[in-house]
Length: 408
Image (cartoon, rainbow, N blue to C red; front, side):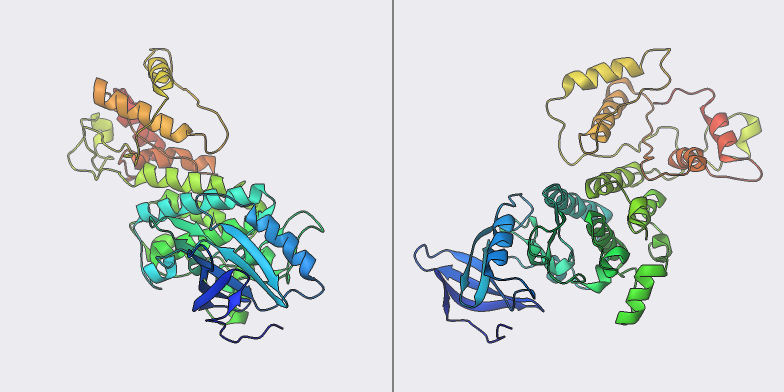
Protein backbone atom coordinates (compact mmCIF):
# COMPACT_ATOMS: atom_id res chain seq x y z
CA UNK A 1 0.00 0.00 0.00
CA UNK A 2 1.40 3.37 -1.03
CA UNK A 3 1.18 5.89 1.79
CA UNK A 4 -1.56 8.51 2.02
CA UNK A 5 0.92 11.32 2.83
CA UNK A 6 0.23 14.70 1.23
CA UNK A 7 2.85 14.93 -1.53
CA UNK A 8 2.41 18.65 -2.28
CA UNK A 9 5.80 20.24 -2.94
CA UNK A 10 7.37 16.98 -4.11
CA UNK A 11 8.24 16.02 -7.66
CA UNK A 12 7.11 13.02 -9.71
CA UNK A 13 8.88 12.68 -13.03
CA UNK A 14 8.81 16.07 -14.72
CA UNK A 15 5.98 17.36 -12.54
CA UNK A 16 6.03 19.39 -9.35
CA UNK A 17 2.98 18.81 -7.16
CA UNK A 18 1.51 22.18 -6.14
CA UNK A 19 -1.52 21.31 -4.03
CA UNK A 20 -4.01 18.54 -3.36
CA UNK A 21 -7.21 18.89 -5.41
CA UNK A 22 -9.07 15.88 -4.11
CA UNK A 23 -8.67 12.54 -2.41
CA UNK A 24 -10.53 9.29 -2.97
CA UNK A 25 -10.43 5.68 -1.93
CA UNK A 26 -7.95 4.66 -4.60
CA UNK A 27 -6.10 7.82 -5.59
CA UNK A 28 -5.25 11.43 -4.78
CA UNK A 29 -5.34 14.16 -7.41
CA UNK A 30 -2.95 17.10 -7.36
CA UNK A 31 -2.60 20.31 -9.29
CA UNK A 32 0.89 20.00 -10.75
CA UNK A 33 3.23 21.96 -12.98
CA UNK A 34 5.50 20.65 -15.69
CA UNK A 35 9.08 21.38 -14.67
CA UNK A 36 10.15 22.64 -18.11
CA UNK A 37 6.96 23.78 -19.82
CA UNK A 38 5.44 25.55 -16.78
CA UNK A 39 2.00 24.22 -17.74
CA UNK A 40 -0.59 23.14 -15.19
CA UNK A 41 -1.93 19.59 -15.20
CA UNK A 42 -3.95 17.29 -12.95
CA UNK A 43 -1.77 14.48 -11.65
CA UNK A 44 -3.42 11.42 -10.13
CA UNK A 45 -1.37 9.40 -7.69
CA UNK A 46 -2.67 5.86 -7.20
CA UNK A 47 -2.53 4.58 -3.64
CA UNK A 48 -1.84 1.03 -4.68
CA UNK A 49 -1.71 -1.34 -7.60
CA UNK A 50 -4.36 -4.11 -7.62
CA UNK A 51 -3.35 -7.36 -6.01
CA UNK A 52 -1.44 -9.61 -8.36
CA UNK A 53 -0.61 -6.87 -10.88
CA UNK A 54 2.78 -5.27 -11.23
CA UNK A 55 4.20 -2.25 -12.92
CA UNK A 56 3.94 -3.66 -16.44
CA UNK A 57 0.21 -4.23 -16.05
CA UNK A 58 -0.23 -0.65 -14.84
CA UNK A 59 1.77 0.71 -17.78
CA UNK A 60 -0.27 -1.36 -20.24
CA UNK A 61 -3.52 -0.04 -18.78
CA UNK A 62 -2.20 3.52 -18.76
CA UNK A 63 -1.35 3.22 -22.46
CA UNK A 64 -4.96 2.19 -23.16
CA UNK A 65 -6.26 5.21 -21.23
CA UNK A 66 -3.90 7.57 -23.08
CA UNK A 67 -5.41 6.42 -26.38
CA UNK A 68 -8.86 7.74 -25.42
CA UNK A 69 -9.19 10.97 -27.39
CA UNK A 70 -12.67 12.51 -27.32
CA UNK A 71 -13.95 16.08 -26.82
CA UNK A 72 -15.87 15.02 -23.69
CA UNK A 73 -13.21 12.85 -22.05
CA UNK A 74 -10.40 14.19 -19.88
CA UNK A 75 -7.20 13.40 -21.75
CA UNK A 76 -4.52 11.23 -20.13
CA UNK A 77 -1.37 12.34 -21.92
CA UNK A 78 1.41 11.07 -19.66
CA UNK A 79 1.99 8.48 -16.95
CA UNK A 80 4.82 6.94 -15.02
CA UNK A 81 6.16 5.00 -12.07
CA UNK A 82 8.32 6.69 -9.47
CA UNK A 83 9.22 3.60 -7.49
CA UNK A 84 6.86 2.59 -6.03
CA UNK A 85 4.37 5.35 -6.93
CA UNK A 86 2.18 4.95 -10.08
CA UNK A 87 0.67 8.16 -11.48
CA UNK A 88 -1.39 9.47 -14.41
CA UNK A 89 -1.07 12.97 -15.88
CA UNK A 90 -4.27 14.54 -17.23
CA UNK A 91 -5.66 17.82 -18.50
CA UNK A 92 -6.57 20.18 -15.69
CA UNK A 93 -10.27 21.12 -15.56
CA UNK A 94 -10.33 24.56 -13.90
CA UNK A 95 -14.05 24.89 -13.18
CA UNK A 96 -14.64 21.97 -10.85
CA UNK A 97 -17.27 19.29 -11.36
CA UNK A 98 -21.03 18.89 -11.67
CA UNK A 99 -21.35 17.92 -8.01
CA UNK A 100 -19.98 21.34 -7.06
CA UNK A 101 -22.02 23.16 -9.71
CA UNK A 102 -25.28 21.44 -8.75
CA UNK A 103 -25.30 20.57 -5.02
CA UNK A 104 -27.24 17.56 -3.80
CA UNK A 105 -30.99 18.17 -3.96
CA UNK A 106 -30.82 20.57 -6.90
CA UNK A 107 -33.39 20.07 -9.68
CA UNK A 108 -32.17 20.90 -13.17
CA UNK A 109 -34.20 22.01 -16.21
CA UNK A 110 -34.94 19.20 -18.63
CA UNK A 111 -33.04 20.96 -21.44
CA UNK A 112 -29.91 21.15 -19.26
CA UNK A 113 -30.16 17.47 -18.36
CA UNK A 114 -30.55 16.47 -22.01
CA UNK A 115 -27.51 18.55 -22.98
CA UNK A 116 -25.44 16.87 -20.26
CA UNK A 117 -26.62 13.41 -21.27
CA UNK A 118 -25.82 13.91 -24.96
CA UNK A 119 -22.25 14.94 -24.09
CA UNK A 120 -21.70 12.17 -21.52
CA UNK A 121 -23.29 9.47 -23.68
CA UNK A 122 -21.11 10.37 -26.66
CA UNK A 123 -18.02 9.98 -24.43
CA UNK A 124 -19.24 6.69 -22.95
CA UNK A 125 -20.17 5.28 -26.36
CA UNK A 126 -16.70 6.12 -27.63
CA UNK A 127 -15.15 4.32 -24.64
CA UNK A 128 -17.48 1.33 -25.06
CA UNK A 129 -16.49 1.07 -28.70
CA UNK A 130 -12.91 0.75 -27.43
CA UNK A 131 -14.09 -2.14 -25.17
CA UNK A 132 -13.75 0.03 -22.08
CA UNK A 133 -16.32 0.39 -19.30
CA UNK A 134 -16.17 3.38 -16.96
CA UNK A 135 -17.84 1.70 -13.94
CA UNK A 136 -17.84 4.76 -11.65
CA UNK A 137 -20.06 7.39 -13.25
CA UNK A 138 -21.09 10.06 -10.71
CA UNK A 139 -21.27 13.88 -10.54
CA UNK A 140 -17.79 14.11 -9.01
CA UNK A 141 -16.34 12.45 -12.11
CA UNK A 142 -18.00 14.88 -14.52
CA UNK A 143 -15.64 17.84 -14.76
CA UNK A 144 -16.04 21.27 -16.34
CA UNK A 145 -13.38 22.27 -18.85
CA UNK A 146 -12.00 25.66 -19.80
CA UNK A 147 -15.15 26.45 -21.84
CA UNK A 148 -17.44 24.88 -19.20
CA UNK A 149 -17.88 21.78 -21.37
CA UNK A 150 -18.64 18.52 -19.57
CA UNK A 151 -15.65 16.17 -19.42
CA UNK A 152 -15.83 12.56 -18.30
CA UNK A 153 -12.95 11.69 -15.99
CA UNK A 154 -11.61 8.95 -13.75
CA UNK A 155 -11.31 5.95 -16.01
CA UNK A 156 -8.91 4.64 -13.38
CA UNK A 157 -11.53 2.08 -12.35
CA UNK A 158 -12.36 1.22 -15.93
CA UNK A 159 -12.38 -2.40 -16.98
CA UNK A 160 -11.40 -3.70 -20.41
CA UNK A 161 -14.24 -5.95 -21.49
CA UNK A 162 -12.12 -8.29 -23.57
CA UNK A 163 -11.42 -11.31 -21.32
CA UNK A 164 -7.93 -11.37 -19.88
CA UNK A 165 -6.97 -7.93 -21.19
CA UNK A 166 -5.93 -4.92 -19.20
CA UNK A 167 -5.62 -4.18 -15.52
CA UNK A 168 -8.58 -5.82 -13.81
CA UNK A 169 -9.17 -4.12 -10.51
CA UNK A 170 -11.51 -5.46 -7.83
CA UNK A 171 -14.78 -6.71 -9.23
CA UNK A 172 -17.03 -4.35 -7.35
CA UNK A 173 -15.36 -0.96 -7.40
CA UNK A 174 -17.52 2.06 -8.01
CA UNK A 175 -20.07 4.18 -6.16
CA UNK A 176 -23.01 2.20 -4.84
CA UNK A 177 -25.62 4.94 -5.29
CA UNK A 178 -25.17 4.71 -9.09
CA UNK A 179 -24.24 1.04 -9.42
CA UNK A 180 -26.16 -1.33 -11.69
CA UNK A 181 -27.41 -4.66 -10.32
CA UNK A 182 -25.08 -6.71 -12.52
CA UNK A 183 -22.10 -4.64 -11.38
CA UNK A 184 -23.03 -5.30 -7.76
CA UNK A 185 -22.97 -9.00 -8.65
CA UNK A 186 -19.48 -8.57 -10.11
CA UNK A 187 -20.52 -8.72 -13.79
CA UNK A 188 -20.21 -5.14 -15.12
CA UNK A 189 -20.90 -4.40 -18.77
CA UNK A 190 -21.38 -1.38 -20.99
CA UNK A 191 -25.05 -1.43 -19.96
CA UNK A 192 -23.92 -0.74 -16.39
CA UNK A 193 -22.73 2.72 -17.47
CA UNK A 194 -26.13 3.34 -19.05
CA UNK A 195 -27.81 2.46 -15.74
CA UNK A 196 -25.50 4.84 -13.87
CA UNK A 197 -26.23 7.64 -16.34
CA UNK A 198 -29.98 7.03 -15.96
CA UNK A 199 -29.55 7.26 -12.19
CA UNK A 200 -27.88 10.64 -12.67
CA UNK A 201 -30.74 11.79 -14.91
CA UNK A 202 -33.28 10.71 -12.30
CA UNK A 203 -31.40 12.64 -9.62
CA UNK A 204 -30.99 15.77 -11.74
CA UNK A 205 -34.66 15.86 -12.72
CA UNK A 206 -36.23 15.42 -9.29
CA UNK A 207 -33.44 16.30 -6.84
CA UNK A 208 -33.32 12.79 -5.34
CA UNK A 209 -31.50 9.61 -6.22
CA UNK A 210 -33.84 6.71 -7.05
CA UNK A 211 -32.53 4.73 -4.08
CA UNK A 212 -31.25 5.88 -0.70
CA UNK A 213 -30.21 4.22 2.55
CA UNK A 214 -27.43 2.21 4.13
CA UNK A 215 -25.05 0.07 2.12
CA UNK A 216 -27.24 -2.98 2.72
CA UNK A 217 -30.42 -1.08 1.83
CA UNK A 218 -28.91 0.41 -1.34
CA UNK A 219 -27.65 -2.97 -2.44
CA UNK A 220 -31.06 -4.56 -1.95
CA UNK A 221 -32.89 -1.71 -3.69
CA UNK A 222 -30.65 -1.79 -6.75
CA UNK A 223 -31.09 -5.53 -7.00
CA UNK A 224 -34.81 -5.88 -6.32
CA UNK A 225 -36.74 -2.59 -5.93
CA UNK A 226 -38.49 -0.49 -8.57
CA UNK A 227 -37.68 3.24 -8.43
CA UNK A 228 -40.50 5.58 -7.48
CA UNK A 229 -42.18 7.05 -10.54
CA UNK A 230 -40.37 10.19 -11.62
CA UNK A 231 -43.62 12.04 -12.13
CA UNK A 232 -44.59 11.45 -8.51
CA UNK A 233 -41.66 13.67 -7.60
CA UNK A 234 -41.77 15.87 -10.72
CA UNK A 235 -45.43 16.06 -11.88
CA UNK A 236 -44.67 18.42 -14.78
CA UNK A 237 -42.28 15.97 -16.40
CA UNK A 238 -43.50 14.61 -19.77
CA UNK A 239 -44.55 10.94 -19.47
CA UNK A 240 -42.32 9.93 -22.38
CA UNK A 241 -39.24 11.21 -20.55
CA UNK A 242 -40.15 9.15 -17.50
CA UNK A 243 -40.55 6.04 -19.65
CA UNK A 244 -37.12 6.52 -21.22
CA UNK A 245 -35.39 6.95 -17.85
CA UNK A 246 -37.15 3.97 -16.26
CA UNK A 247 -36.26 1.76 -19.22
CA UNK A 248 -32.59 2.64 -18.80
CA UNK A 249 -32.97 1.75 -15.10
CA UNK A 250 -34.25 -1.75 -15.86
CA UNK A 251 -32.82 -4.45 -13.60
CA UNK A 252 -32.16 -6.66 -16.62
CA UNK A 253 -29.44 -5.13 -18.86
CA UNK A 254 -31.11 -6.69 -21.91
CA UNK A 255 -34.23 -4.57 -21.30
CA UNK A 256 -32.30 -1.30 -21.38
CA UNK A 257 -31.51 0.52 -24.61
CA UNK A 258 -29.24 -1.25 -27.05
CA UNK A 259 -26.43 1.18 -26.16
CA UNK A 260 -25.92 4.37 -24.20
CA UNK A 261 -26.13 6.58 -27.30
CA UNK A 262 -29.58 5.16 -28.06
CA UNK A 263 -30.64 6.07 -24.52
CA UNK A 264 -29.44 9.64 -25.03
CA UNK A 265 -31.20 9.91 -28.40
CA UNK A 266 -34.44 8.57 -26.92
CA UNK A 267 -34.25 11.06 -24.06
CA UNK A 268 -33.64 13.93 -26.46
CA UNK A 269 -36.55 12.87 -28.66
CA UNK A 270 -38.90 12.43 -25.70
CA UNK A 271 -38.02 15.88 -24.39
CA UNK A 272 -38.46 17.49 -27.79
CA UNK A 273 -41.71 15.69 -28.43
CA UNK A 274 -43.48 16.81 -25.27
CA UNK A 275 -41.56 19.73 -23.78
CA UNK A 276 -43.30 22.21 -26.07
CA UNK A 277 -46.85 20.86 -25.88
CA UNK A 278 -49.50 23.59 -26.12
CA UNK A 279 -52.02 23.88 -23.33
CA UNK A 280 -55.63 23.44 -24.44
CA UNK A 281 -57.14 26.93 -24.70
CA UNK A 282 -60.02 27.45 -27.14
CA UNK A 283 -62.64 24.86 -28.15
CA UNK A 284 -62.06 23.00 -31.40
CA UNK A 285 -64.61 22.97 -34.22
CA UNK A 286 -65.49 19.27 -33.96
CA UNK A 287 -68.57 17.27 -34.89
CA UNK A 288 -71.45 17.41 -32.45
CA UNK A 289 -71.06 13.73 -31.62
CA UNK A 290 -67.55 14.33 -30.42
CA UNK A 291 -67.85 17.82 -28.94
CA UNK A 292 -68.96 16.56 -25.55
CA UNK A 293 -65.94 14.28 -25.33
CA UNK A 294 -63.19 16.76 -26.25
CA UNK A 295 -62.08 19.15 -23.55
CA UNK A 296 -60.53 21.56 -26.02
CA UNK A 297 -57.32 22.15 -27.93
CA UNK A 298 -55.75 24.99 -29.90
CA UNK A 299 -56.93 25.65 -33.44
CA UNK A 300 -53.39 26.50 -34.60
CA UNK A 301 -50.96 23.82 -33.56
CA UNK A 302 -47.50 24.86 -32.32
CA UNK A 303 -45.66 21.95 -30.69
CA UNK A 304 -42.60 21.60 -32.93
CA UNK A 305 -39.34 21.39 -30.93
CA UNK A 306 -36.98 24.33 -31.32
CA UNK A 307 -33.55 22.93 -32.34
CA UNK A 308 -30.52 24.29 -30.53
CA UNK A 309 -28.47 24.50 -33.76
CA UNK A 310 -29.28 24.94 -37.48
CA UNK A 311 -29.38 21.93 -39.78
CA UNK A 312 -26.47 22.16 -42.20
CA UNK A 313 -25.88 20.29 -45.44
CA UNK A 314 -29.19 18.45 -45.74
CA UNK A 315 -31.30 20.88 -47.79
CA UNK A 316 -31.82 18.38 -50.63
CA UNK A 317 -33.05 15.71 -48.23
CA UNK A 318 -35.44 18.18 -46.57
CA UNK A 319 -36.91 19.19 -49.95
CA UNK A 320 -37.27 15.59 -51.12
CA UNK A 321 -38.99 14.47 -47.91
CA UNK A 322 -41.32 17.49 -47.90
CA UNK A 323 -42.31 16.77 -51.52
CA UNK A 324 -43.13 13.16 -50.66
CA UNK A 325 -45.14 14.11 -47.60
CA UNK A 326 -47.30 16.51 -49.62
CA UNK A 327 -48.24 13.96 -52.28
CA UNK A 328 -51.99 13.24 -52.00
CA UNK A 329 -51.53 9.48 -51.90
CA UNK A 330 -48.85 9.42 -49.23
CA UNK A 331 -50.11 8.48 -45.75
CA UNK A 332 -46.89 7.15 -44.20
CA UNK A 333 -43.26 8.03 -44.79
CA UNK A 334 -40.50 6.25 -42.88
CA UNK A 335 -36.96 7.50 -42.31
CA UNK A 336 -34.60 4.64 -41.45
CA UNK A 337 -31.01 4.56 -40.26
CA UNK A 338 -28.80 3.66 -37.28
CA UNK A 339 -29.11 5.58 -34.00
CA UNK A 340 -27.48 8.99 -33.90
CA UNK A 341 -27.45 9.80 -37.64
CA UNK A 342 -30.00 12.59 -37.26
CA UNK A 343 -33.35 11.08 -38.28
CA UNK A 344 -35.29 12.99 -35.63
CA UNK A 345 -33.47 16.25 -36.38
CA UNK A 346 -34.23 15.84 -40.09
CA UNK A 347 -37.92 15.14 -39.42
CA UNK A 348 -38.14 18.19 -37.15
CA UNK A 349 -36.66 20.37 -39.91
CA UNK A 350 -39.16 19.08 -42.47
CA UNK A 351 -42.08 19.65 -40.10
CA UNK A 352 -40.91 23.14 -39.19
CA UNK A 353 -40.55 24.17 -42.83
CA UNK A 354 -43.96 22.77 -43.77
CA UNK A 355 -45.49 24.69 -40.89
CA UNK A 356 -43.65 27.92 -41.59
CA UNK A 357 -43.78 28.09 -45.40
CA UNK A 358 -47.09 26.35 -46.16
CA UNK A 359 -49.04 27.05 -42.96
CA UNK A 360 -49.45 23.28 -42.70
CA UNK A 361 -50.66 21.82 -39.40
CA UNK A 362 -47.83 19.70 -38.03
CA UNK A 363 -47.76 17.72 -34.80
CA UNK A 364 -44.55 16.24 -33.37
CA UNK A 365 -45.09 12.99 -31.46
CA UNK A 366 -42.11 11.13 -30.01
CA UNK A 367 -42.64 7.37 -29.85
CA UNK A 368 -39.09 6.26 -29.07
CA UNK A 369 -39.95 5.54 -25.46
CA UNK A 370 -43.08 3.55 -26.31
CA UNK A 371 -42.60 -0.22 -26.13
CA UNK A 372 -46.28 -1.17 -25.73
CA UNK A 373 -48.29 -0.85 -29.01
CA UNK A 374 -51.40 -0.09 -26.92
CA UNK A 375 -49.79 3.21 -25.88
CA UNK A 376 -49.28 4.59 -29.41
CA UNK A 377 -52.79 6.01 -29.91
CA UNK A 378 -53.02 7.54 -26.39
CA UNK A 379 -49.62 9.15 -26.87
CA UNK A 380 -50.67 10.73 -30.17
CA UNK A 381 -53.91 11.94 -28.60
CA UNK A 382 -51.99 13.42 -25.67
CA UNK A 383 -49.66 15.28 -28.05
CA UNK A 384 -52.70 16.79 -29.79
CA UNK A 385 -54.15 17.95 -26.50
CA UNK A 386 -57.03 15.45 -26.53
CA UNK A 387 -58.13 14.00 -23.21
CA UNK A 388 -60.36 11.05 -22.40
CA UNK A 389 -63.77 12.08 -21.21
CA UNK A 390 -66.75 9.91 -20.40
CA UNK A 391 -66.80 6.64 -22.26
CA UNK A 392 -64.97 7.74 -25.42
CA UNK A 393 -61.58 6.09 -25.87
CA UNK A 394 -58.48 7.91 -27.19
CA UNK A 395 -58.81 6.25 -30.59
CA UNK A 396 -62.38 7.51 -31.00
CA UNK A 397 -61.41 11.02 -29.92
CA UNK A 398 -58.50 11.02 -32.34
CA UNK A 399 -60.65 9.83 -35.24
CA UNK A 400 -63.29 12.47 -34.55
CA UNK A 401 -60.69 15.21 -34.28
CA UNK A 402 -58.75 14.34 -37.46
CA UNK A 403 -61.59 13.31 -39.79
CA UNK A 404 -61.86 16.70 -41.54
CA UNK A 405 -58.29 17.93 -41.07
CA UNK A 406 -54.96 17.66 -42.80
CA UNK A 407 -52.14 17.01 -40.35
CA UNK A 408 -48.53 16.01 -40.81
